[in-house]
Length: 297
Image: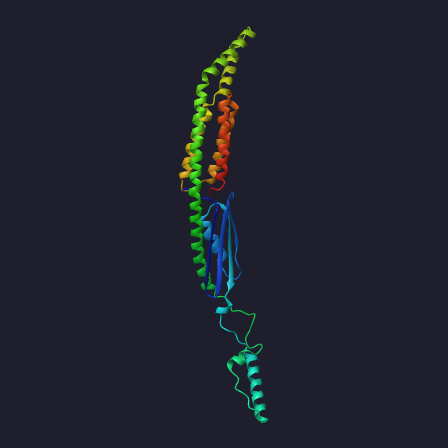
């Protein structure tokens, strides 16, 4: 079963003081082009990601993005101990001064103390738990990659159905061309005989060896048997590649060039309106198939 190079997958998660979102997209390419957009500060994540993707993918332009947000609300409050001591000292001075002049003040609460400027540190966050976060992200990436590959397989099944249908239509056209070529044989033989008779009448002395050579060349130029045989062989080779479990996109792309070469030659040798029409239909269908194959891994 072939795989498509076009796919998409995404995942989100939360844990170890962070929230993250994975995004993975793939389109066709001549080789494997990995584009990773990962946050800094998580040692080994990029290396692990490249290794994981390289082990499952052989072709495609693949972009992997990770958006990581540190969850500040889940972190404990950080206190400035020196500022806390200054605030408490100031509160104590206020209480003593009030007592000295006979003023009674209510007792300050912990909330009152924390509300003072500078007691709680702001704009600073604790370092992420990188070791555990790396393990969680790596595990999440493995699931993401599996989902991505499953979508490539799903797209590949749809693509294979299209290619199988196109190959069947190419075979039908090739057999139509074979039937038309066989049907025109008497006409072609009569035309060749008439041409030979004119040459014999116009030239009294003929080099028989040269005449034989020219007749052979004329016969070859009008015979499309080899082109049709090669088209049949290419159809069989294409079906084998489509059924192959290993990536075969490059081989199929090369094979389509051979298909097109035979269709071009068939048109140039046609010498028949009907056969030319079949050759042109072949060229159009082969081009459609070649465009589909650009997405095969």
